[in-house]
View: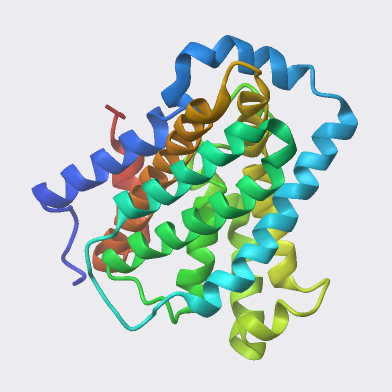
Length: 271
């Protein structure tokens, strides 16, 4: 990028517009199951406070454990390869089929497997957009994707716009990146009450909204195995779209600078 760059190329503007459409128009993780929308809205509102708290704690626990495993095992040497979206969709769908067969009792196991594969898929997409998985900034940006839940009637107290979410998490990201650079991501995940753990908690608080929607959907008696697979497919499809948009925007920011890309993004009408 040079100081003379004042506008994005036609191709990059199209990529940015497509990314905004993904970010702004996808409502919630279960959007692909609109026929269940009314049931989900009622179901989530009627969840007991104790169960809502359990879901929030489960989202945090699953995310924390998955982060520890994925950051250690994901191949980091490959760059710019096409992401294996279909492979991860198949894995997550299979998990949903098993979870759907056993109902809400298997939800914790299904969520763990689903989140593991989703985060690996997000990292795969990040790498395809030129991100370096050895970078702590990239690793934390992958986690940010799980906070990009779109708009829901159950997140009215949160800023859900793309840049609003990034701003809301910016302090936690900066502190976590500094801490990880000094101590190493793997080391700090063994401790407690540090900036990495706090960042995961911030992401989990947003991710738990989609987790609650997934739980209510899978708890519907008529869903069964096939329905569980469909729910998981919609779930990962949502976050793959979020990841593609997020890392496309980050790629453009590396090329043009964050300020210009953000200004261009905000000037676009989604659609």
